[in-house]
Length: 182
Length: 134
Image 1 (cartoon, rainbow over the protein chains, first blue to last red):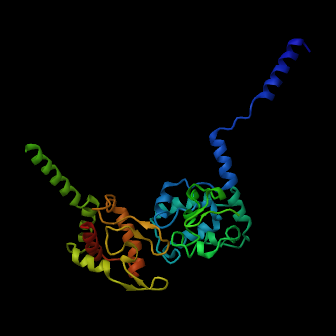
Image 2: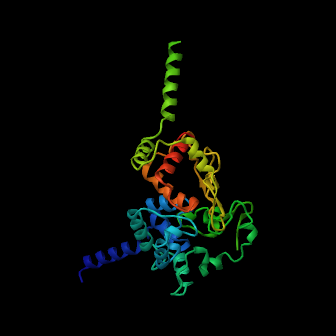
Image 3: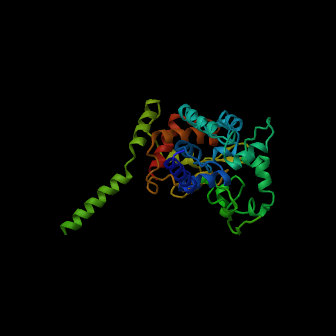
């Protein structure tokens, strides 16, 4: 081997070894989101149509079979009529199914799916075993007995970044109580 | 003096604009008439707004006021989820009644929940006339 080749190869090796691993802010945010939460809600039509009566729940909180069942009965949506136009129904169904907890890269979506049996089709996020496990220590007086919370389904009453799909403990503030740490 | 007159004129013009029904309301009221309704009556609309209907638990007594309160200038509250509902009165909420599809969507959903059936053209005509004047 000629000396110039040797020097060149040493230089190339050295430069590769010293290239710093650069993560952009987007990478960091994505990593944080994947490890701490579920995907944020990205569809404006879904936000508008489903978010007028309740928080627009991130689709990664339920498996596709749950969303499919729910979208099939919007005339009786937990006792309420939530019918939408056929066009909107199609767009929203596609959004929910393609962003469901199944096959998700997000930690909490994976945990929700793995807490379910294959034949389970939960319609309420609050009925999934993972959700119940995570909230098992919260006393009723802080939820049902708390006029600023009322129900565990009001995620954003305590999880200040729920709509962004973040459910980690640092963002929990229970109204009238304060921070919640396990 | 001239400027005061001009200002009064401008304010009066603005007042008129604010009170005029939105194109969405005008269109819909015409459409209800083409479906056989007579001109909307705000008093009848108000009675319908406050009328209570029996229904299944947990909301055994249902009326528009369950969620929207009896003052349309108030912020309402969803009967089951508790989520805040923006005031329906156009004098308080400029966005209200400006989108024809939205008005029809909510009439369909909310009449089914409250009355147990869809409202007919006359009922919608009266209700919309009442709400648009708030």
